[in-house]
Image (cartoon, rainbow, N blue to C red; front, side):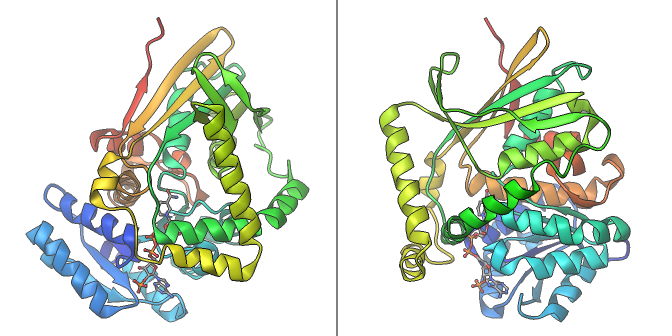
Length: 395
Ligand SMILES: NC(=O)c1ccc[n+]([C@@H]2O[C@H](COP(=O)([O-])OP(=O)(O)OC[C@H]3O[C@@H](n4cnc5c(N)ncnc54)[C@H](OP(=O)(O)O)[C@@H]3O)[C@@H](O)[C@H]2O)c1
């Protein structure tokens, strides 16, 4: 377990689009919170420029250290992991660059948070590093951005409104928009390229990770339908989010004796739905052809992303319909720009939570979800920083 460390937090990937936003958020938090931290990356000149920008935001950021590390150098990652209590990484695509840092943190007993939404990567890290992290005390927490915090903590918040001695069914409906960055684009193309092989492997392993305590936890049957309560189409959404909710439910008894979760996009019209399906189908097909994939990657280069004005216009809402026996509840998670503004906030607050709230967190280690590692405490932090989790009164 991390004890004598030079930094509470090291932010690796601070020169990228989302890493820089996360560093800026942490710099602003220095105004009211005391913590020691460093930015890290592979390019010293770019890091120095980020540091100057941080000092312009918050003069206390003069104390922020600058560390060099490269994914190609395992020694540099070991040094990073040994120096920190928590490492944040935004060096993606994670399927390509992520594993060496997870390995270093699991070895060193260092807590770790990232922004991956790549299911194949998360499955691989669970298989390879869960045992070691449990032994060293490291908490490896993937998916600490829009993938999957609003969904994981939203389902957790909804469960808390329901009796835990009856079967629980929750459906989550996601609405929102916004443009995306070069890193997100590259990660999505990588995931599309490997989607077929990944789903074959996953189907082969289906049902092998049961709750282990006699409780049932499963995905709710999903189908495209018009939902009268929402007044919109509900389209099954095969992101990583339902897998994360299911993992939290397997680990936490408060999800009840028989838990089901269904995950949907909320779409206003059939025309939008059809256009989205054609667009994604085309991208999945093109991502299978290497020259086409490379040409697509060049459309949004690394380091680029939506402007401040575009981010200010973006927002999200996730609505949850929960039921347990006779009891029904509707809850809602809301915030601003899902992809970057709120994502950098969620990532930074997750790291602050692991670094500073240790005594208030459950005694757990291994490859964990946000609900399992940080539950109520992270919920409190996010609410205090402007992301709302509310019960919607029913008339
Ligand atoms: N799930 C979500 O909600 C969500 C939201 C936003 C982003 N993301 C994910 O976050 C990741 C980052 O996205 P982004 O748009 O910020 O990416 P980006 O702008 O391309 O930044 C990538 C970062 O990785 C660094 N890097 C690349 N190769 C490296 C290496 N060998 N050693 C050390 N550093 C290296 C880059 O350093 P240089 O500056 O030196 O090139 C840069 O700092 C992506 O995987 C994206 O999918 C997820």
